[in-house]
Image (cartoon, rainbow, N blue to C red; front, side, top):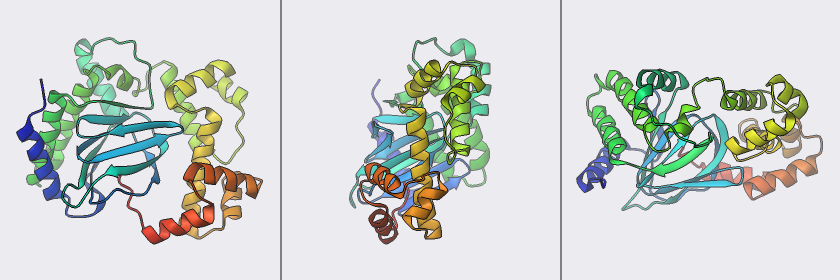
Length: 302
């Protein structure tokens, strides 16, 4: 069944109505809308577990070397908190980029899964930190109803909670639902990888002891490395590097630190090594990149 053209038009109209701003804004707890009338520079952020739906335009995000593109026909799901870079790739004044990001709490996914387990199909899909899938009519209709409740401010917070349960149900019963079922804290490798991600995020400035971390998680070093990379699309060392570089960029922007000081704060001993990694990740030297970021004041449309 194809998506209804009138529904698409209505979704664009609702987003246009509720995005009287350029950039990204949280309109209700856990619900963020974004608008851009031009393609944007690439910006970095930390992605929370969430569903991202584009009504108009196109967006792409990069996790390590993996690139995910989504548009009005495809949605993106992030199933773990992780560092990313992203940019709006298609937008104009006449047809601005319009999108919705809905946070997906693991506790809610666990509750819905437990209530609807009989309806959730089995699948051989591996767990993934992020995936893109075709937007099916049943999910689109729920998203459209979610946007309609914004016209009723007094009812919106309560109704949003109910609609989020249906959104999660539609995701779990979709053809890629197995990828999302790994998000709740179950006794499997996903739980172990999630713990590793949290530890690497919290202790990013410290050297990684792969053998010690694997032992702590009850895995062999080779098994840990394999499962981490299959889920996150990057190795543990690459993941830590992404976290360090993103944190250093934030330090330079927020605290006006020079590159050497920011690199040292996040765990780099060699300033030249830090600068090389930074340029490889962000496409420019720390000084030029931060200077451009300040001048552009790029909105994080994530």
